[in-house]
Amino acid sequence: MDHKASPLNRKFWTPGVYVMLVFMIAGFLAILARFTGGIGYVSNLSAARPWGLWVGVDVATGVALAAGGFTTAALAHIFGRHSYEPVIRPALLTAMLGYTFVVLGLLVDIGRSWAIWKPVFFWNTNSVLFEVAMCVMVYLHVLYFEFIPIVVEQFKDKVRLPGILELLNGPIEMFLKVADVVASKMMWILIILGVVLSCMHQSSLGSLMLIAPTKIHPLWYTPIMPLLFLVSAFAVGYPMVVFETTLVTSSFKLDSEMSILTPLTRITIFLLGLYMLLKFGDMFVRGTYVYLLDGTYQTNSFIVEVLFGILVPWLMLVSTKIRQTRIGVFTAATMIVFGVALNRINVFIVGYTSPITEGGYFPSIVEIFVTLGLIATLMFIYRFVVTFLPVLQAAPEPITSEEVSS
Image (cartoon, rainbow, N blue to C red; front, top):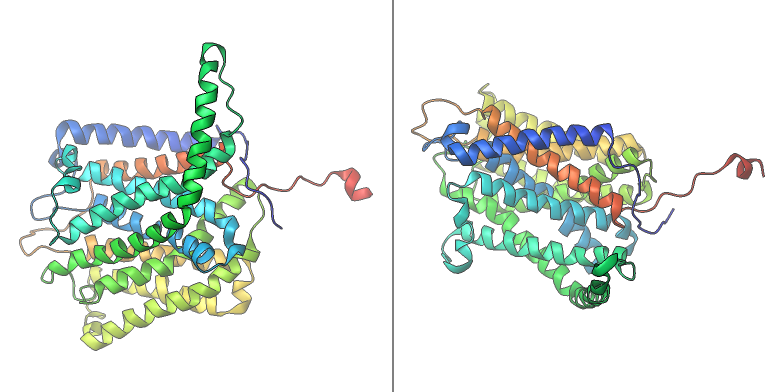
């Protein structure tokens, strides 16, 4: 059933929101400790282990799981599949918050966070990291510009400031109308730019790790790592939309959107199958399957990644019976999201070992609280936005007993 997007206007302060607030406060205190005491004071990072949880989860995983924004935009606006419009706004919001989460994670992780602006003016065109930085920065701005029409839709012709502030009503309304017109005229450029930028930095995160052939376990190090990162981002885009939409519609008791989510899973069969073909084909061509029986924690993590993150969910989606059930679609989507997230963690943390590292790495409690705090903040802002802005499809009015009897 098709419904117009509208604010939920539900009670905001719920027990779940208070739990988010607790994690946000813990994360804030952890970040405060990081900036007052330094990275070495609060983390288990070192010169031999320059990155850990903050890069593996906050940055690499965050970028991958935000892929639903550009994949749904491409599907609906570039390929003309307008039936998927209902999931574009929540996917856009998730991508926008996801990339904001990436930037905040970077600010915590890099040693001199106040110098994060320098790549804008000091270009190193030979650096893959420079390309990633510029693409993420520009794409984040693109996402915020794409979100402008949603804000304007809510507040246009509704600005009513009290008292002396009433003088600002006219200028604010004019600004909103101009912003709406400009954003609408530029939307097709923003969508194309967003898709191009996303493809560039998704693959470049894989290119970044090509410089460490002696530090990454052979099960993950491959010359086609940029291609694997890009295809896996495509493969996880629609499952992330399914995962997010199912959680939101269940939480707020909205329509399940199964008529939209089921066709998305058919596309995922092809994309995940392509990723699986590349992943397994590369493993057999390079002969790295010989490591599968080593029994090390790296090997076990790889087996979990490909078995429960690729093979099993692909077989589930191939089954028409499973694709027609909400729990089946959600389970498969969750496993794919888990698989791609674990892949980024494996590449950047589990499979990464410096030759001069004397021991293994496990994040400190402060590192964990920073990440949990940032995730809670993302969820808190998402809840706030969908409550007061027209992002989700409005739920139908409940049927009364009188209507049933009639």
